[in-house]
Image (tube, rainbow, N blue to C red; front, side, top):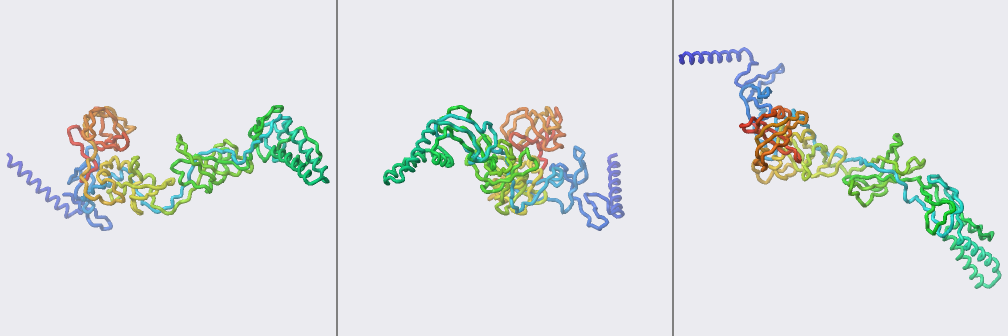
Length: 524
């Protein structure tokens, strides 16, 4: 009985072999034993299929076409396309299929001028150098107000108020008598004339020290009549920004009764962030936009960078002088400032998105060749709106990953690779070959809940030896949708995970409990 079965099997095998040989003779497009013909109308050479690899990057292959547990076809690897060379200790190896799924995009480091426009919020303020206080230097009384409203526009020389002071009347009388004495002693001896002239000069100096105008002094000397009141006038064209004078009030020497501000030129004071202050230079031009006038752009000059920093906002005030001929700019208005900055010359630059910043280190993924990425420590310099200067670590023309670099971090355990090559710069090889880095952390547990929208799962796991964790329930994030689909509430699993950010733990591999959790991105 057994002999008959064996004979039948041998006949079937011979028949299958004969059919294969006949098919090869009649149809060059047939597939068997991993041989595939890809001849096209252009007459390309046939390529041989070496094996079929797992579409998720798992370290298993097949000599024949097959599907993985999720129904995805295994990918053929042709002769000449395989990359059996193992990744070096400072490189990450990811399959071409996985690169396409992650949406990895690279861009060359280029030499550019880092022109930057610094934007800051600010406010309009009056120019302190154009603010004047009217303060009598003697005691007296406000006799009459010519300007009685705060905010009123006044011209230079316009009367503001009149005051009466007994001291002022006495000083005027002394000067008038002295002036008349000088006139009457013209024919007297020289010493007598000199004494009277000195008395007149001292009386005149006293009046001028009290801010009596030359016009009033000449009138007093000519007529010899003292005036009961003295008129104070505006020293500039401007706005009355403060009025303390009330008709009939008594004032003391030095008391500010009026304040007049010239608003023909104002300040825009902007709060520039600490990291941008090195770009700001006095004398540079600045553009200011005001919400009240969206169609207008005001241009000014940076006149001063304040020497102090506001600790609460980490900003430094910068002052811009702005002409204000029509008084459109009102003190207190909010302003949006643009401060163009000049580049220091062409430097090696990369997009801002290429940098992975851990807080203590800045890392860039450099594409060594297809499917090979090398994490490098970089030293960064100045930033523009979309690019950043690289001082060390990347050379001009090298391809850097600008999209999906954080996904590569999660998918391929970037931290393990970085730890393997240490703090080398510019792609230099380490002095000696480091030991193979541990890939992720392994644990077993039970899936409690799954949040498909957030891509997370709550898992109760046992102790994690690599992190010295006890058993606990915590939330993990799935590295991709394929892993998330394997996380079913109530399922017992063995999984592998890495820390992508501070307190963010990402699952990179899942297998049913009892099986080893392999690295889904290892080589063949």
